[in-house]
Image 1: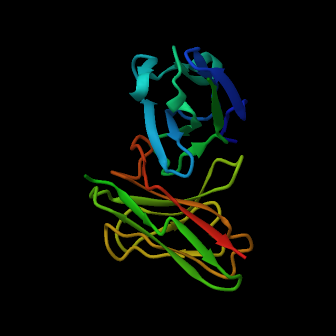
Image 2: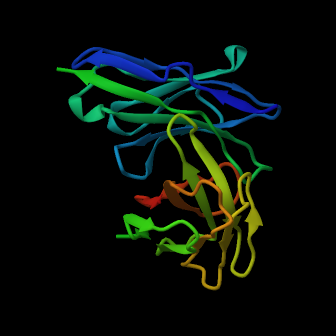
Length: 113
Length: 114
């Protein structure tokens, strides 16, 4: 079955520290991969996406993600987090034949001052 | 600025009443979606629409209904048949319904039914 796993429900990071949020997927076709961010009580905003080509993709707000086909992973990284990065982050997977994205359950990022 | 507008932001209803959530977009997008969000469960698709006057059920359509009479509007009705309607509802749109078309989201409507 197709699925997306975000193993960490919560992650706490000190301001200025580096961040890595994990995303693993199980998907039959070659996937399109997305990371979205949701601030409390708001909708989701696209951070970055991977369709093909360079496996390291850059997104908005200083985020990047690396697609590793052998590990079925698409982890999100940021070298130095800011208090404004506190939010929930969702990984999602789709493909060209499917209208419906498969969503991870989300990882809530908490920033320590 | 183009975007998606959901209204109201907060909605309170008594059990047994139907309620309609509004979603309007001015992005000229063909595809529109309704998702339900509960803590720890990610997003679950309720209904989606590829074009005007056409829509399909998602994974959790029971107890919900939609219409797509205009390209820019995709209202969701939560009926009294929905067993657990209290949730955060998100509307989204995309240029196409293909998997490589990123979703644009509204800011959501939080529905509380007592």
